Structures are given as structure tokens and as C-alpha cells.
Image (cartoon, rainbow over all chains, first blue to last red; front, side, top):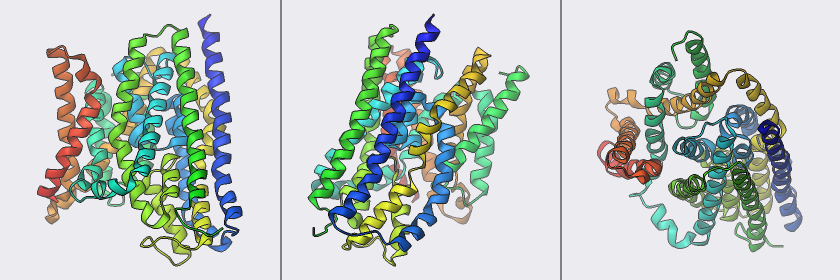
Length: 223
Length: 244
């Protein structure tokens, strides 16, 4: 009996996610249009085409892969929020994963969907508010945040984040973790082109590879 | 109207869009909380989830402010404020803006004064990084339904499946932490900095888990991730001075 209810909650999340997503998308594209009207200029079409061609093919490919990779991990509500507010792999997803882990709920259950949505919504609100405060206080803050003393702390945020997250997940799934960890270490150490700029592309590779390994190990009864 | 990168009108427009973004988060938050109540989830768990998510977010959010400051020298404040509050991460937005400026033969060193350049940069940034926002609402439901089908048939596999996805992501970032290690053989020890930070953060996380069980301090487990994140970022300062 609960099944029907669950479906209807998820259905409304999907419906509202679409409405919000497309409305915000429209607002984002309206922004340059209104800028043009306000300052009475048209964009330089040649430069626009050149700039767009330089970034769009790669970012659109990455964007599509990100949707396929992250939607199942984020859950429905979490995904609709995350693809608007961004910073998924370095903030929203770790936040949601950790929230589900400490709450003791499974990612694919309805409880997981709710905890993930709550966690990502709160994280998005806090991020947006902190950035607003940063913008208001930008003059006094700039010398502090741009100081060479603090620079390494921000430069090393990802290792600091994934050290904590990694130890939890790897220790809980040691057998399953071995193959992907070895593969990724080998790839990143041996291929110089793999660095902070390309780690995003390697996430789907890691995910697909780990799923295949997991399926084989599951079928063989190892996990 | 005369153009400035920090024109009040641009601030107002950006402020309106960001207000809508906050409204979306509040909307989904309230919806999820209502649903949680309806299915009888523990209020305490929800409260803890909200507090710990907020605390965890502080440090990464400040690093986003650092990104806004970095981009503001050339793009003014409102545009980076918008781009980094919506979708973008610093590395993506920086490259998009750079490519657009390059098309004009300009670079990042000084503030844009020509409105045409500004509008073009906005278009390139908006269009270049819109894919996720277009495809998530388009295919989100299909992807989720597909997942449900794979998983519905087998409960145990369902659990392994989501663990495997998280592990896949974590392993990619683990590889990234070690990406410059080989430079040690060329006498450059800076590649070890992320490794030391990663290891230190992992140790702090493990300590938090250990203490929460031994000392029966539940909060240590709840806040272990933000604690290890902050400790890792803090240790990066002396470690960088040492190995950099």
C-alpha cells in the first residue's frame, strides 16, 4: 500500500523539479538578454561563437555524463537542486553521502531520498547565504581570504574532504574498493594529463568500472 | 545606460535570480520535511542532518567566496556571484570566461569596460555550462526509473549498487590526490602535499569514529566529516610550507 504513496511523492518531486529547473534555466538565459537591452548592446557574435566553441563541446559532454552519473547518487530532489546550484562532487554529493551514512539510511530508499534532499537543500541555502555575505563584505574580506597564508588551505580542500569521506567508505567496503582504487592510482600516477582539471571526467569512469567489478563479485558471491 | 561591471542594475538582476535559487531550495526542503513527517521519520535525525549539513558546508562555501573574489578583478562582483551561486565551479567558469576574453584578444588582468565584451562573456559562460541544467530536468525521471528497475529485482544488489557508485567516485578523487606523486623522483616534493593532507584527514576521521564509540560521544561521529575537513585544510598550511 505504501508503494503507491511513495510513487506519488517521487512523481511530484519530478514534476516540481522540472518546473523549477526549466524556470531557472529561462531566468539564466534571460540575464544576458536583459543586459543587452539595458546597456543597448548586442553581443559580438563572432567572439561568442569562438568562445562557445572553445568550451561547449567538452562541457556539454561532461554535463551529460554528469547527469547520468550523479542523478542516481543524489536522488531525485537532491539532483534537481544540485544541477541548479552546482559544486556537486566537491560539496553537495559528499554532504549528502555523509548525511545518509550518519543517519543510517540507504541511498535508494525513500528515507534516503528525503535525507539527501534535506541535506542538499540546507547545503545549497547555506552556500548561497555565505556567498551573499562574502559579496557584501568583499572589501574587508578580500585581503584575508586572498592572503598567502590561507591559500594552501583552500588549495587542498579536495584532499582534505576525500580523506575523511574515503576512509569511511573504503573501510566499510574493503573488498570492493581494492580494484577501483588500484586502477585510479595507476591511471592518475602514470598519465600526466590527469589532474585537478580532469578528475571530473574520471568520476564516471570510476563509477562504471566499480559497478562492473561489483556485479562480477556479487555474482561470484565474493561480496 | 553607462556600463560598469559593478553597475547596481546588474546587482539587482543577479540578486533576483539568486533569490529564486534560494526559494527552490526552501521549497524542496519543506516538501521533504513534510514527507518525512508523513512517513514517520525520526525528527531528531532530520534535525541533526540539517545542522551537520550546514556546518559541513561552511568551509567549502568560503572557498567559493575566494573564487568570487578571484574572478571579480576582471568580471566585477555580480557576474562571478551569479555564476558561482548557480551551477558553476571556479575552474569551469574561469576557463569559460578566459576563452570568451581570448576571442577579443583580452585577458583576465583588468576589469572589462566594454559592455559588448561583457555581454558576450556572459553568453559564453551561460551557454557553455548549461548542459546539466537542461538534461537533469529532461532525463532525471527516466534515469531514476531505469535505476529502480535494475534494483527492484534484487534488494541486496540494490545496496551494493549504490555503495559501488560512491566508491567509484571516491576512487577517482583518491587517484587525483596522488596525481603528482611521481614528481618526487624529479626532486619536486610538492606532489606529496595532497597525499599528506588526505592521510591526515583520514586519520582524524578514523579518530572521530573511534572516540565516538569509546567515549560514547555521538556528536563526534555526526561532525566527523567537517572536523576532518577543517583539520586537513589546516594542516595543509604547514605542510605546504614544508614540502612546497
